[in-house]
Length: 597
Image (cartoon, rainbow, N blue to C red; front, side, top):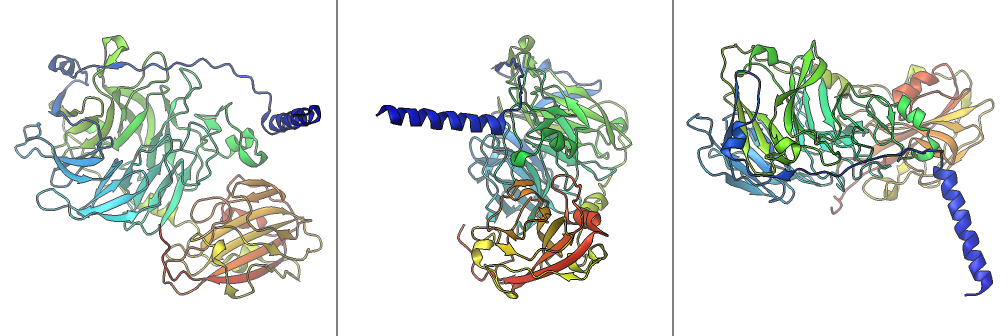
């Protein structure tokens, strides 16, 4: 290598280093002391089980043993108990026909699927979630299952958090958790670090909430119908940081991860995309409602609905299994906790069943995961360390509360936002103060013509190039794309963009799918009906007649001040009274052949 070549390499390296500092350097200087400490596993002997502690009147006993990596529990209406085993890739069934609180015999394997984890039972069918799939099968009279049918095959890749959990909500819809691929990063797939909602047949799904690092445990409050979930905190921030989060999950909300944690803590490790500041990310995120000791690893979560055998004072409270820490010196978790609620609002965490951590925190006999109500009203807990199912039964004299049926109104109300409204062009918010009619064109398709497949989600999913003429007096432009032929979400929002600079009259093909763009500078993108940010291409059901996609452009006399990921309705409300002109380009798309998976 010549001296000139070496000099050139040094110069390139220096420029790259400066560039990296310019993009990421913000003066952060945070000393962090962290530990990796894993208490040793010891056998769950009778003496150690006898040392478990629960509130007065409760008895903790062994329901079943030798189940290896027991994870999630689901109980059928007939009382049969199903347990997933992730490491062995199967689901087993247990019964207690004689009602003595002990499984009648060895577990019976009912299905095999690699990575089987999440379980739900709905209308006589068992649903099983693996890393990327959800299967459904009828429950047979003997408790076994019929032929498995794949209903979802494209959940996002897993990375660090592969353990999908599922549950049917009071609205009859299937809710799915998809954890993050990493400890703290900007995900490339918008379905990671979310809770999803799907139709029972798996044919359609949307993102309910984002910014959730790994919410394995979730359930609906039996009095209010509100969805609550326990999210895993970020690792390697220190022994006491970050707390495990109890969140009220609401559609369209962001919950902080990966840049903000807890009730407003800032993650020093991360950098938001698009030159978004952490202050802005924090302002547009929902803080946790309650925090629990860091690194305890919350797992399955259930509410007491009354009508069982627990005393009335427990009705409306939640219970969470804490699998146990590895990223702190003094171990946390390894217990079942109770979350006390009052008038539908959480008040505090308190221990419920403890003692799984033994020898002053140096060893453990269980890592609690699954949690469910048995038909007889007892609580069942699955341990994925020694493979034990524990039974927590109340044997005192206090009476239970009447059974509560969780209302569906709250979840239905959230799901119906923005549905059944006119197209943006026809709404009162877009009434124009001027006479300007904008001619919107695309180099990809002519008016009322077919949109090329590369712009659909069946193919590349890239946004089309768009061009228009400047409107005098405009300070910004808004773009909204809707499909009025979609069902059941009508119209389906495929793209929301605002604060397109006034001197921009063309958008190139394939814009970035993030909240804020640096090119064109300052362009903001909001949530689609899918719940993702940025362009979401046509994806009509295979065989449907052509759907019509309305690309609608508004010229405004102002810039809009809106939160990150704002919805179409947020944008239109802010644009009201500021519209100088509008235009529209309609394209069609039909998918005749189902693409291979």
